[in-house]
Amino acid sequence: MNRGISYTRAFTTLFMRDIKIAIRHRGDIFNPLLFFIMVVTLFPLGVGPEPQVLSRVAPGIIWVAALLASMLSLERLFKADYNDGTLEQMLLSPQPLPLLVLAKVLAHWVLTGVPLILVAPLLAVLLNLESNSYGALMATLALGTPVLSLLGAIGVALTVGLRKGGVLLSLLILPLYIPVLIFATSAIDASGMNLPYTPHLAIIGAILAGSLILAPIAIGASLRVSTN
Amino acid sequence: MWKWLNSYADPERSYNLAGKLLPWLACLAIALIGVGTTWGLLFAPTDYQQGESYRIIFIHVPAASMSMMAYVSMAIASFIGLVWQIKAADWAAASIAPIGAVITFIALVTGSTWGKPMWGTWWVWDARLTSELVLLFLYLGVIALYASFEDKVLAARAAGILAIVGVINVPIIKYSVDWWSSLHQPATIKITEKSSMPMEMLMPLLINIFGFGVMIATITLVRYRTEVLARNGMRPWVRALATKEVAK
Image (cartoon, rainbow over all chains, first blue to last red; front, side):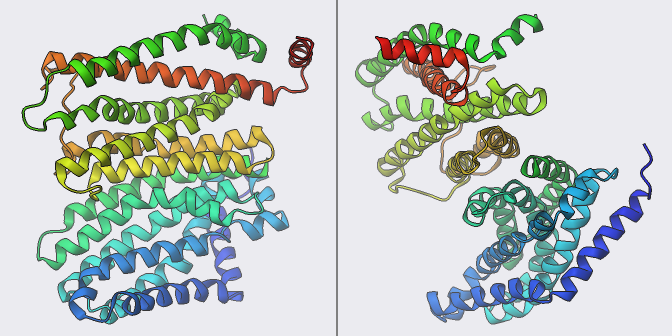
C-alpha cells in the first residue's frame, strides 16, 4: 500500500502540529502546571509547616501532585481531535496508528511532563527535601512522567467517546499509575538515606521501555473501539 | 475440534449448555465448600503458633487465590472476544467481573480480620496487600467502563482492553511476597515442591480452594445466562422462551 509520506515525516508532522496547537492555546500548558504547584502548596498548610515532617513527605507529595496534574491534562489529549473529526482521519490514514498516537503522546509529554520536571526542584525547596535527593527526584520524574502519559493515554482513548469520562478516567488509570509511584518515591527515599537508588530507577526504566512498546498498540486499539 | 467448539459461540446453544451444567456445578460447589469449611473450622488441628485464629485461612486463601484466577479468566475471555470477535466470550468476561470484585473484597476483609490478632493491625501498606487492593480497583474500573457505554458491544471491547492491560498486576500480587520483604507470610502451598503445611490442614484448604473455583464458575454461569438473554432480547428464541415462561 502506498503510504504517501515516510514514517518519520508522519511522526514529526503530527508532533509539530500538536505542539503548535498547544502554543496557540497556552492555557493547556500552564493550567496543569499551576494545578501541580497549587496542590503542592496545599500540603504544608494541611500537614503543618514543620521542616522535618515536610522533608519526610516531600517525595510523596510531589509525585502524587504530578500524577494528578498529568491525569488532569491528559483528559484533553484526544478530545478536540475526536470532536472535530481529526481523529477519524488519523484512523483512516495509511500510516500505522501506534506511530501516530506515539507522536501525540510524546507531544503531550513535552508540553506537560517537561515543564513539570523543570518546576519540581523549586517545589522541592519549598518542601525542604533532603539535599541529596534532588538527583533522584529529577531522574524519577524524567523516567516516570513519560510512563504516566503513555499509560494514561490508554484510559483517555477508552473514554474519549463518553460524555462523562472525567471521573471514570481517574478510576481507570490511577491503579495503573501505582507501580510508578511506589518505585519513584522509594528511590527518592533511598537517596535521602544515602543508599543506592539505581535499582529503583532501573525498574522505572524497564516500565518505561515496556510501556513505550506496548502502550501505543493498546491506545490504537482503544481509539478504534471508541470511534467505532 | 474447532468446528465443534465454535458451535457453542451460538448464544442459544451456549445458554442451554450453561443451563445444563449449572445444577451439577452448584451441587459440587456446595458439597466442596461444605466439606472443606466444616473440616477446616471444626476438625483441622490447632496451629501451635497462631492458635485458633489461623482458621480464617480456610476462607482467606481460597478467596485470594481465586480472585487472581477470576481476573485471569476474565482477561482470557476478553482476549478471545477481542481477537476472534466471539461475543459469547465478551458476555462471559462481563459476567465474571462483579464476582471477581466481590471475591477480592472478601479476600481483603478476611485478610485484615486475620491481620488484627496476628500483626496487631487491620492494615499495613505492604506489597501484597496494596497489590490486592489495586486488583479490586482494576475490577471496579472494568465494571465501571462496561457500565458507562450504551452500546454493549463497544463496552465489552473497551472493558476487554482494560482487563488485558491490568493483567500485569496478577504476577505482581503472586510474587510480591517473594520480591519484597513483606509482613504477609510467603506461600505455603507449592505445586512442585513439598508444601510447608501438615496434611490435615492442607486437605481442607485445597478442597475449599477448589470449591471456591467451582462456586465462581457456578455464579458466572448464572450471570452469563442473564447476560445472554439481555443481549439477545430481540432474537426469536429468547422471545419463545419468554412467552413460555409467561404461559406457565
